[in-house]
Image 1 (cartoon, rainbow, N blue to C red):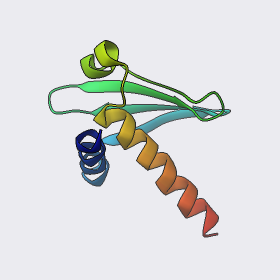
Image 2 (cartoon, one colour):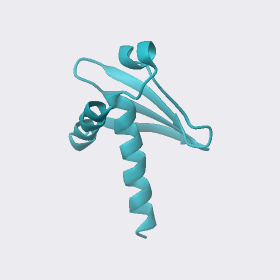
Image 3 (cartoon, rainbow, N blue to C red):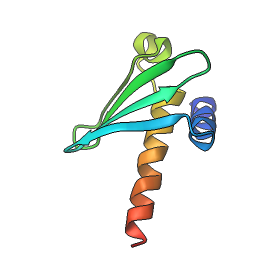
Amino acid sequence: MYAAKRKGEMLLRFGRVKLDMKRGSRWYFTVKGKHEEYSVIIDERKYYESCTCKYWTVRQRRCSHIWAALLYIKQIKSLLRSF
């Protein structure tokens, strides 16, 4: 898990996370991985998360793409609280 989180931090740091849309409590992202782009969905209210990468599809565990999206959300919320 920690390796995936570290990779997610790197994806965020290098600008590979794009927020496509936010509707209600659901966030939609495109995250550029090493070789391709993945779609990530995070729903805060339902504690739902998904990714189109093989790691998530097979293992159902947080991948680096989901971590990158979660860290993006955390960053945005922190920024909004500072106003």
